[in-house]
Length: 104
Image 1: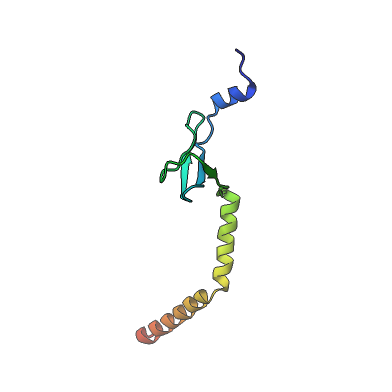
Image 2 (image 1 turned 90 degrees about the vertical axis):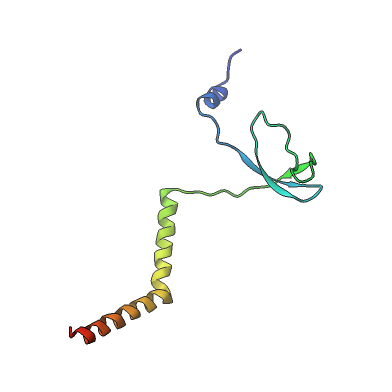
């Protein structure tokens, strides 16, 4: 039997572990399952119902670009925050007090 290009690709590069989210139609319990090609049909761990609905799952994206964007956004918000102004005022007061106490 000849394997297709996709089958060869799957043999060469195994897929990521697919974790799916489900909600039981019978009892409304939400759960996650690792589902492989050889896995049996999903069933609810709370009530053993074999009729869960698969939910749409969110996902996270993490790359150097998104990381740098997050850092830049944090820095901009920090610069504009009252916390930064308070820290700068406290530093000025500390330096002034040190000069007065130590004759600087």
